[in-house]
Length: 242
Image (cartoon, rainbow, N blue to C red; front, side):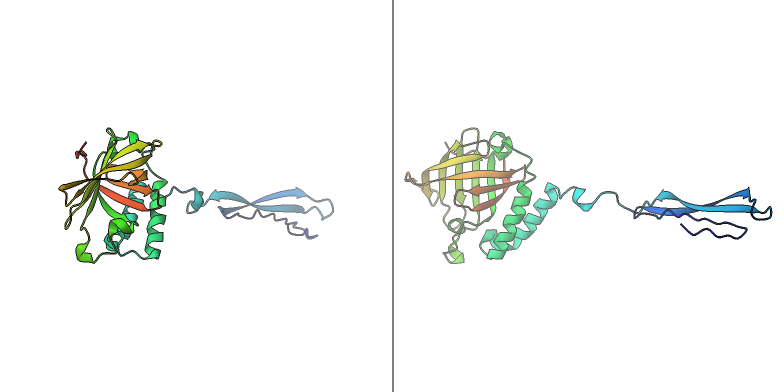
């Protein structure tokens, strides 16, 4: 507030400062009244104050309140990161860490909370990324590695099947035992060497599998040894041999 003078005109100004989300509109009002001590002259009181007005260019929502990425965006980022890595065979430790982080972000928006009860799980899936060295066969020369790997699941009969493509076409089938609505115990029962020669699987051929993300196109699973699996659906009508 400005100081009061003793001249014939007394001016007092009060200012309301605009905040970060307001802009000022200044208006001045003058009040006059007689002064007995100033030879009959009038004293004027000039008051300037500010009326607030919203600044439309200001966002009222801080960044942490904005919604996160949707599942499509997260899937696209994951698939783009996976694409040059030859299903994981060419992944460096840094690549694996990045893929795992992207997969965990996608798992947070999993639309199917009980995948073992969903028809979306049933069918034949193609493996597009894994951290499992035994599946990737990284100890072999590239010419002797399978060109593609598939996994089929029929949750309605609790059966699963893993398949390799050229050059060996090995297969293995398994029984599934639900541990909860998204996790199963896996007991392998029969191998087929070259896709033709049946060999009974030993009792120790077992594991666990948790489905952590599922939709009509993509599945993310994690094994009991800490391996990550990302698969895409290729044939929802496929049935596992009983």
